[in-house]
Image 1 (cartoon, helix red, strand yellow):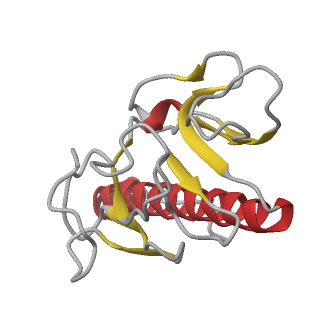
Image 2 (spheres, rainbow, N blue to C red):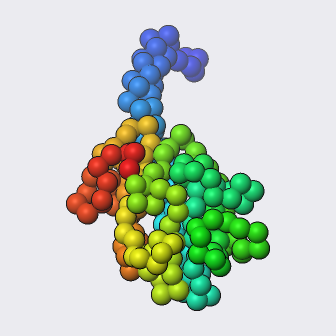
Image 3 (cartoon, rainbow, N blue to C red):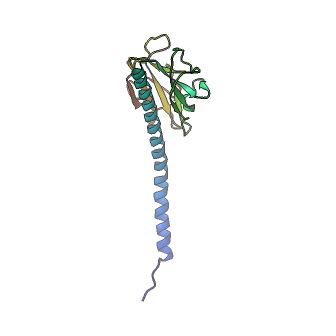
Length: 183
């Protein structure tokens, strides 16, 4: 009767096979995580923009979103640090005392960047759902959402039209409105 178990050769072959599979699988897992993170972040931004737009139409008022927090107000142009949406009663694109906060978003994780040339310091929606600057003129533009892989198929563009329509595209897709991660 033979005792159960593995020989040293069988064990070494098994370890070698596991090592080869791990060498192939680990890089693919890294891309999987990056892809899911950027999809999630672009979807979250789109949802917050849609929510702000619908809140502007629901309340028949201007709703502004700016980079910053409820404690710091509108602060600079680093959208990746978080943003706040509020009912902008005096249409000055700044979070003032007494203005109602609609939503707050936390900073992006993964050292991802979120930038826009047109919406560098704020984006605002009118009562009709259109995107407008503080003077009331229509605004159209894009946000560039990039991760460590930079601009290309892996980056996302969040495009906002003058009418307030919002869509997410690959950054280098036709109509994305962006050419790099800084604008």
